[in-house]
Image (cartoon, rainbow, N blue to C red; front, side, top):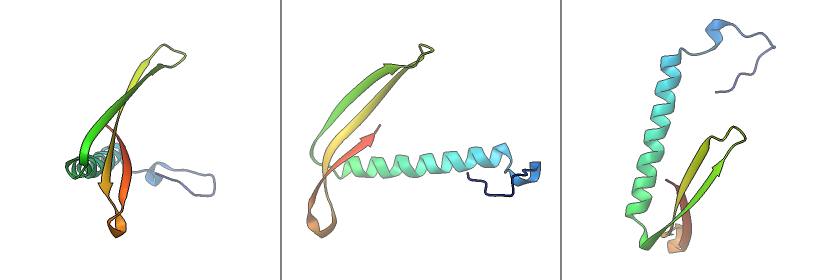
Length: 84
């Protein structure tokens, strides 16, 4: 969501929170299905890596990344990564 205006923002300038929620969920579903398709079409093995860290407030985070080979444009092999 990006607002480009004259510096004044009014209540009507922003979508309702339910619309924003729906937009986020739609984007999530699109990326989820794309990742799922990419993993199904992976050639050979799929390798996973993890990364753990915490912020200054001691909130912990973990990321899992899938690494795999796919067939790209002009039938070339491509190294692909996806955050799981």
